[in-house]
Length: 175
Image (cartoon, rainbow, N blue to C red; front, side, top):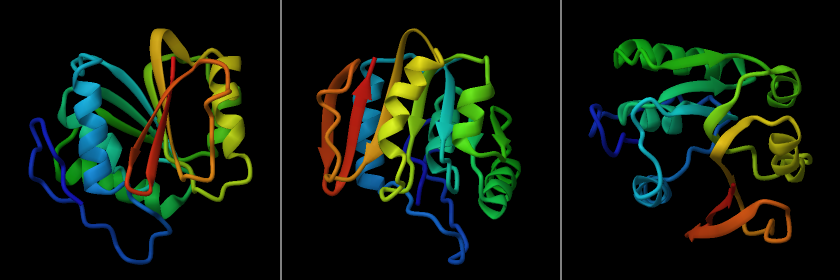
């Protein structure tokens, strides 16, 4: 996986094969960030990356100047993100190893943009949009993006704004 743009453009992130992740494809990631380039100013943007995996999305945001909090429950994945940030000298990615749902319920911090890439078969995936808004995690005019498979349709969920499809990767936007 490569970082597409920003100060780290072209740098590669190669995760060990034994990590239980499904990284967002470069094609889908590049398409998503092309959409975001027209909507947000990345400098000083406060981003929450839920289910951060190996940190590809976190590094992409950080490369563009955003401040990122990556939430990852798996200790090996969380350690990998920390090691990657150290190796690439990224100071604006912070990693917290905890359960995403526990974090959502406890935090009082708010964010300009929240990205969530849960396992596609996560039984509680459909709760994420309502929890983000129930716990007021977004700043005014904030954006929540949920990556999911074609099996999910969030078009009738309150605050849904649009769906973008890139191959088998779907992004639902909420604001």
